[in-house]
Image (cartoon, rainbow, N blue to C red; front, side):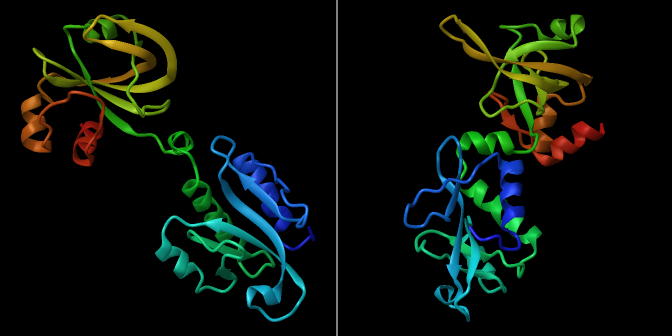
Length: 252
């Protein structure tokens, strides 16, 4: 592949940011480089050197282009109205676009579109790993486990891992009746710890570690307050924390 202006920088960026190496799949086009996800093997980038006239541009000299996939067709259409952005060369289906790598498009814009393509084609597991930390509201049933006593004797405990929870997330522990209130804020310090337990009514296959960061008085966030102020009528499983409640929990 010809050493065009931004191509070496792009290859280094993909390697350092996404850990992907170029694959050269076609004997007829030995310079076409494909980059794909390791888990689902979907392409998120294709770099080609193409004669300008095949792109609808003036001249016959070859220019490197990057093909990326956009999630939103409207955004893809808007991008193609900007200089250096073109309908995708050799890919007619989906929301793919071509970006010139001759310096006509700032590298920051190229990197932004590349990230969009990476996320658009990523597996659920990859998206989960990449998402920012999240706040969860998680129930604790005193009939199964005395979490109050546990945090009286240790700052970090094992807990049943909810679906979607990952290391770095924050969990607010709601303790059920007779307490019926949010009592603890914890940080998830480790996930995906294998565990096998079942008693007919409760099954646990994986654990996480949660570290105590803060305690709340039982009368500060009781169920009655959660209902009246935040529209939460019960906590039966892991769920996201509504923004107004999260603000109150953090500011209180």
